[in-house]
Image (tube, rainbow, N blue to C red; front, side):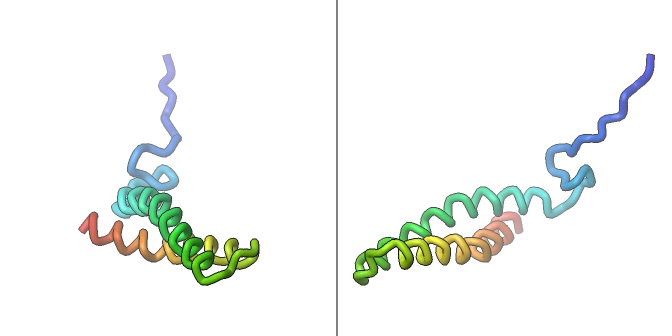
Length: 82
């Protein structure tokens, strides 16, 4: 009987190689999902309150919210993982 070597990525690994940053990246991705939607929503509401009620300012506000969530999620993940 021949043994088959597992080549897939394991939990906590990036590209099959175990990395100490893998849990932080996973946590940052989860934080990004939540903070991206939150920041985009806040900026959309701010744009609407400011009187920008056409499609372009709303889309720009949503995009800026998601872009602002990238560094926020990375910083929060670094703080939480130590």
